[in-house]
Amino acid sequence: MQQSIDTHAENAAHAHARTNPVLVYAILAACTIIEVGITIGAALPRQTLIPVLLSISFVKASLIALYYMHLRYEKALYGIAFIIPAAFAVMLLTVLLVG
Amino acid sequence: MCQKLTAANVVYIKECVVRAAIIVLETIPKTDKIRAMNQAPVLSKADVGVHSGSHINRKFGFWLFLSSELLIFCGLIGGFLVTKHYAATWPTQAQLSLWLASTNTFLLLTSSLTVVLGIERIQADKPKGLTMFLLLSALLGFLFLSGQAYEYQHLIFGEKFGFGDPFGTAFFILTGLHGLHVLVGVLWAITVAMRARRGAYSSSNFTTVEMFGLYWHFVDLVWILIFTIVYLI
Image 1 (cartoon, each protein chain N blue to C red):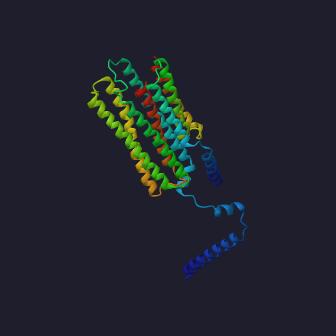
Image 2: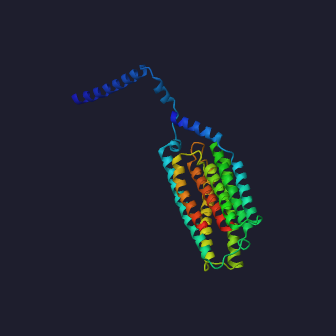
Image 3: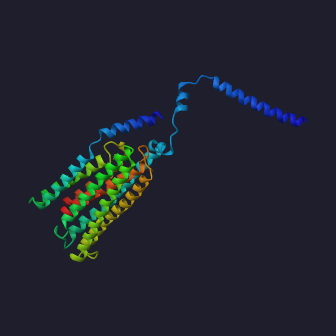
């Protein structure tokens, strides 16, 4: 019982420390606008455009995983289970896009 | 006669033993631990589930499921890129209707926010708020699917891209599988919202809501990758 109470207290502390989801949403929306703006407006060469777009996309995906899926506050085990295949995915896509 | 007396004696002895035990137990001074155990509220099945090993196992299993899903989408995106590299014809950004895809992206991003806000409501023991935000998420997901259906109709009948050409095969399989995930998410959101309305969840019992949230955010995360690779690059 005491352990359960402690866990509730820890959860409450985490809940207070968590980043404002509206702020995360604003960053995600801004990143999307920048992505579309760069694609339509900026006359960047393809060699520059692809890494820039992929970097923005990576930032957005990381924000969702860390703050919306709460990976930042969860057990490291969950993060390891998700980050290993994610790293594989990033490597595969990078090789395909660069190649 | 002898047997009847024996039976009566046995009953009498039993009663004496029980009364003696009660008297002895009442006279023993209670320790603080025993007092705390007597005063502790009885935990419901749900309360026990939230912090038990079962909860952790369910969550870890769900993360493993999402990891496998990520690899499936990774394979399909890889296939899309290889097909694009070797295809003789490929639609332009104007043909792919970038504005519609951007609107769909905003719809999914907003739905992710509403799911987070819904989970915050149930953590604060406000099931009505959870129901409202989940139904809003389901509506946004439905609008996303409507936009995708319009896009498919435009590509198939307007631009004449079908399953017969390389683009059509790669595009419809990738975005179609994602759309199927959104559809499952919409149905799941409605189910969870209906259960929340009946009071099935509380601040100490919301594992299912948490699982739904993880699933929905994952669908959003995958769309972010699809949007960049299919529509922008």
